[in-house]
Amino acid sequence: MKNSELLDLAKNSIEIEIQELQHLKDRINNEFLTALDLISNSAGKLIIVGIGKSAHVANKIVATLNSTGTPAQFLHASEAFHGDLGTIQKSDVVLCISNSGNSPEIVSLLPYLKEYSSALIAMTGNLESKLAEYSDVVLNTFVEKEACPIKLAPTSSTTVQMALGDALAICLMQKKSFKEQDFAKFHPGGSLGKNLTATVERFLSQNRPSIANNATIREIIISISSSKHGITVVLENKKILGVITDGDLRRMLLNNDSLENITAENIMSKNPKTVSKDALAKEAMAILKENNIGQLIVTNLEEYCGIIDIHKLLDEGII
Image (cartoon, rainbow, N blue to C red; front, side):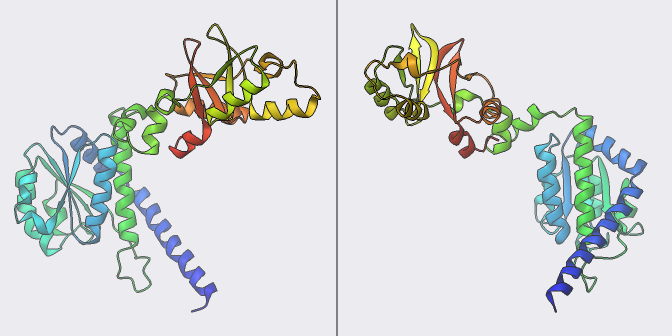
């Protein structure tokens, strides 16, 4: 097959899935709202059951729900008969995903899913299936054709299932008034959580280079060299007067033939950009980017606390 034909095949498969997603969009109705109410009003968790490719979809939906404020757990249909049915409590709602709705493992499990839970929701492409018959609510994920060229591998059907799962999660977030701060609680270790919760103090350098305003060129060079940030802070009675960077030093050397009487106050940049140690790290990053600088002076009620570096923030995923 030629490369051009492969590109056409790829585009066609995506187009098929787009069309099936549009059909799904057109089918969203009161059944979807009923499913939302059952899940959001449940005193327990949402158990999502699946097998085969639908099991992979179920796991993804569970992960999305757990991270957005809806407690959920995956139950593999084939493992349910070997002890895992104990996962389900009477206060739980069960969402069972099966494209055909007639998989043997699913059909055998249905009486128990119905009995052990407070409600059974089906996500299926077959409204005449056993799954649809047993369920309190049926979410229709019918697809006219799979994107697979031999029309067998689950492609369009799993895409539709995934999209419907995302729609449930998004609407449940809205019903629960789930905010950025709530999202951050469940993502403390990743870049998302850091951007939403991490403060400047967390990334503050332990090195706090400083000099007096009458410091000599030698003292300035020693201070900057020891800081590892290419910058030092000019202080007078703990008050920040300015900063001197290695760039300031280079410009001074280019513009002066004699260094004899030059002190820190002759070189420093006054009114440097600062940020509170209690500010969000992403706020510090915004200041750095806006002013095209590499370091910020960190303060606590105007007292010099240290330096925060753009490279440190970038390494930690702050954007």
